[in-house]
Amino acid sequence: MMSLKKIVVIVCILYLIAPRINSQQYVPFPLPGAEWKFAVYDDLNCQFSFCGYYYNKIEGDTVIGNYLYKKVLQTALNGSEYYYIAGVRQDTLTGKVYVKLYDNNFCGETDTLLYDFSLHLGDTLQQCSDITGCGDGCFVTNIDSVKVGNYWLNQFTANYGISIIEGIGCLGGLIEGWTGWEFGYNILSCYSINGEPVFPDTTCIMTNVEYSNCYGETEVMVYPNPINDFGTIDIQSNITSNIIINLYNIIANRKENIFSGVLSKGKNKIEIKAMDNKSGLYVLQILDTEKNIMTCKLISIIH
Image (tube, rainbow, N blue to C red; front, side, top):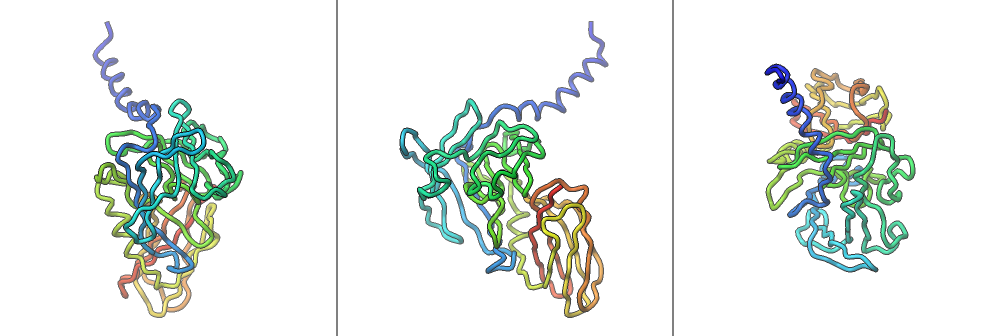
């Protein structure tokens, strides 16, 4: 007979690996009753601070060519009325999701690969550059799992700040422009199922509160961007100020405190050490406690 000690060890191992085992079972896209809330940061109009929100949901069917698609609906920035932008369909056997946008020029194909949840480490993302925003240079750098409501979902992280999750999609935009656009980025602020927030947490307070209070009034420059191992923050201050700089990942979990202290009047340089952070998209939150002003800067870390 097996000893009690061995039974305890086996039970502990199964407990630890259970989430990973569950995460290997493909979870269809999207989850029933899903709604996405994306925060928009636009360097051209808002200086990389918060511009507002738009929403996505999937509702109803449409036939395009020989396929039955689910309709993808979206609101305008800070709008409330939904309009049809695309159709999506999935192959649950292969873990692939396909898209056809209302714009017939998108990707130049009738049926285009949107998500591939069967990827392995090192695999290249095969989507067209309209979707990924990085041409043929995107490949998987990490695969792990995240808890979303009652599900353990596979998360695939690629270079250029791309992260996609089963059942949810890309954290930088549901359809096109996963790596942002020339002057700004989208960040998944809140993912809900049947009206209940489930990701990045059950309240989605972090992205709604911490990021939406960013006004961009402090003169801040980060270079190089993307950052490899080291980067520099240039902060121009008109007065001597107490400054706190925190680094958040794309799902609003604080990774580390970069700096806390007094900055002198004039230009200040602060070093960012990025060696211990995974490749991806991050937000630098700069709080001036003297003037009660918060500034946010989006940065990419690529190793």
